[in-house]
Length: 422
Image (cartoon, rainbow, N blue to C red; front, side, top):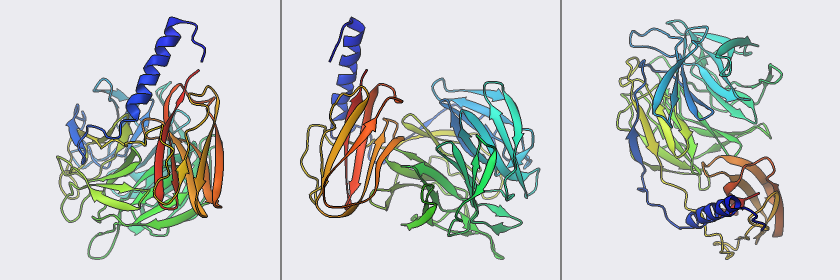
């Protein structure tokens, strides 16, 4: 490797040390994670989904302490632990859908005013100009739904209208300002949670209205935007609605909820094993919340501390256990005979090849992640025959640093690391 300057040599040394540290088989954090307290939300609210844009968390609309809908938008900077006020949403709304795409923020539907009248209005916020623009409305008006971005397209799923739970799944393309109807969710529900992991949308929990009150569900269904197909997975241990979910370090975490009472549960789902386990509970039980990951922390801001209404300004950060990757020098098979080889070349400047062997036909997924646990490329997803295979990754669009590549095959998972260095 060519190192012609002192700066280049130091850069190589720092990244090499990072790679060595990454091969440590265990991390120091507690097995169930830990909670931290950050600067409180200036205006206490509930029914407020969160969205991350350029490392900052946007909290829009919701119910205030007087049970009134609001149009306020506050922005939290985790690195500085400070809040700022941005231009208010043009319409006071609660139980709204919130997502980011192409460097902008989108509000998609919700309930208008102080009641539960669903709307299909869509607003785009540009942080560069601090301006809102109204866009093409959703085909279906609704509130208490979820909005998740995949490849800069926003999927709006579930929710309710006129007291009826929906399974509706509609895709918004901000580049063309158009909507497309996609395959409906098998289980209609509202007050649900969703998060993106490995290119698929995991939709969790929620509730269905009934004559005797809301009925919580623990349902977990995953949607693949590529195939437009749904799959049912292991249900959540604690059925609840009004909850929030976020993915970090190869796991999905689900927080809070209500009815009966208010939940403090924090449960972890492992997509690799389709299994759940309880984690460190929330210090303050809440519902009507959002959850987003920034760096190594999941933030849950505001919410309701009692069933129905009520607001709180608590800003909690949950730091989950870290993923412990497989040592990069080992090419031994994992149980079952699956072998994953170290990528070559490594470090790489542009292109690298990953080889692996599977002992029998199997469904295989090979994904590249950054150190925040975000999938940056899926190289293989499908059923392969027994034998040796290889996949190439072109890293031209990705910055220098350490990445993880994870292969799941035949019920086993292994993770290794690689380095991009130019």
